[in-house]
Image 1 (spheres, rainbow over the protein chains, first blue to last red):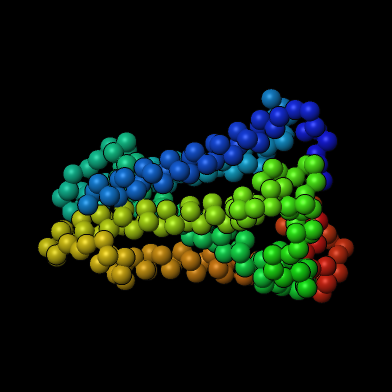
Image 2: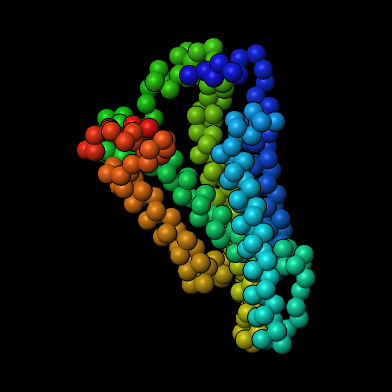
Length: 40
Length: 225
């Protein structure tokens, strides 16, 4: 069911949440892969 | 601003408590790490240094991988497997990927469908499995991160105890790695399995994770309140 409130405006907030979570997760993954690999 | 908070309250709430719990874990873990160092005549480290240590990374990644495995398995298992009476299950008889019409893909897509659902080619195939693809990617990368940070930790311990270092393959086939992995997996599997069953008989009024309070116990499979 299409959310009527969305018609006519861009869902910026939902995209922002997606970008924030994805960035957070992949930054964490990259950091600890680098930490682990360089530690050895 | 108020509308932004209301429309996104679930993801904001979990994001905030995630950061608070991670900060708490870092502070407590730092204290434990330094206590251990002092007990073994080692050097203490700053909190900033602890945040980029294998010790902290390993503790974080070990839990991440099991959570993402849990969700990946849940997403995939519920395509084919059902639990009669559970709101977490799809209706009996609907096992599998379902028809293009049911899933609104290709020529069955409507004007509100995402573009990649409309193409009907490889892009629709990718989009049809995109949640699984992302969750599996995060699971595998965090499991790999757990292995390399755990490997460093393991070798540091080996050196302390005057034992030979192991290579990465040696570590990922060690009991140490599998104990750390499986102790997380077992709890996730139990929680998911038991939740699917509990939700047959019990209710939480207003939660989409529960059946409606008045829904029949031995039926209403896949109904969410």
